[in-house]
Amino acid sequence: MSGYVLAIDQGTTSTRAIVFDGDMHVAGKGQKEFTQIYPRSGWVEHDPEEIWDSVVSTVHMALRDAGIEARDLAALGITNQRETVVVWERGTGRPIQNAIVWQDRRTASYCDNLKRQDLERLFTKKTGLILDPYFSGTKLSWMLANVKGARARAARGDLCFGTIDTFLIWRLTGGKSFVTDATNASRTLMYNIAENAWDEDLLDILRVPAAMLPEVKDCAADFGTVDPDIFGAAIPILGVAGDQQAATIGQACFAPGMMKSTYGTGCFALLNTGADMVRSKNRLLTTIAYRLNGETTYALEGSIFIAGAAVQWLRDGLGIIGSAAETNALAERADPTQEVYLVPAFTGLGAPHWDAKARGAIFGLTRNSGPAELSRAALEAVCYQTRDLLDAMQKDWKNGTEDTVLRVDGGMVASNWTMQRLADLLDAPVDRPVILETTALGAAWLAGSRAGVWPDRDDFSATWKRDRRFEPEMDEKVRAAKLKGWKNAVKRTLSEG
Image 1 (spheres, rainbow, N blue to C red):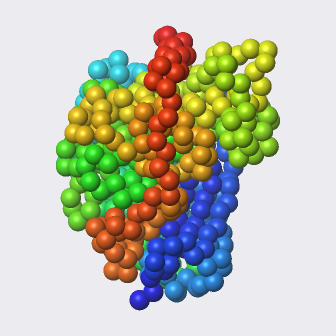
Image 2: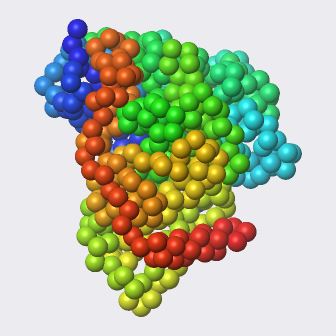
Image 3: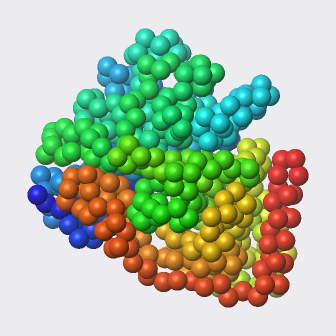
């Protein structure tokens, strides 16, 4: 059997398809951006049909780029933006409205109402999550309440709910497979991560009919077969994981204590805690890292909503840079005597603050502040936020996190300046891998290993190679002063600060 494996990486701002060969090297790729829809302040939507079209087109691009046909593929893996909600008609596959994106904050007041009923402890106990608009459950509840007739149709079994992976699998299989994996299910506020099952109590609170929920499988499992009319061959779908869990797998963070952080639109740090379901006392999330062969591995996660999106704001919102790549050189030229802090709470603040009402702010501006200082502040914001997460993780779990080496991936890690500043502010080594396509690689490994054409977990881990290690170089007094300035900026940004 061929060792070619296709990974569909359906992200927040673009869709990518990557073909890996039998040696797990990139053989071909395709990428396509799609529309970001902002109906109101704090609302973010995607057109599911546009996402579907982007998946089909990028797969064709990747196959052409690799010089192969669909019949040459041994398997297909999917990784996806998590928490984004799609509801579609079971009979036609048509979405009932635009997808509500993970960044969307429209359910902030609903979450506040649930907190006033003292329900957050129940949700956290069962799901490992907190009550925040970030997660899927309140988005789904909003959709059922606000799309005419939706709740009644859902109760009759006429509607399907899914995160993006479920919607894509449904479409790819011609409606034959209505499934998700444990990592995506664990982000919905409706899934009991200890019992590995949809939770009836939480469904009742959110008024979500169980009839509209997909079957939950391991990350490496039989998710169905692609309809041959779509790409020209029947391809088994054998691996699925939410993007941050897929990156954890792609970084071979299989041992407890290993940690990775992905820098894309947002930033997400996961610390593998093994079979230990650590209950955070510092507003981190307890989540499923992966489930393989029926065995669940847990993680502590810190979620930052805005990372690369801050650089996009410099480009598209302010127009002070022409491309994201310019920020590296600009940051290097920034005036070292200016301490400009950008707190990118454009859609609220995530971990460890979880303030849905906070909004972005810039502190320390002078008449001499310009594109260089703002670029440095945008890049440093990612580093400061990661430091906040690492501090919280070390307080929650003492099993060796003091000596953590952070494995990094995502678009921002190509910036040497940013990675050095990250190591400096963390006061910890940062490892950048040779293969930066770790999210897609994780999905591909799940599928390829399940198909029997790629190595098992131990042999896959042995293939991980470091491109460069960034060691901390910053003077301790300088680091302490910069961190103090950051904490002050965040305090002044919080809605109750």
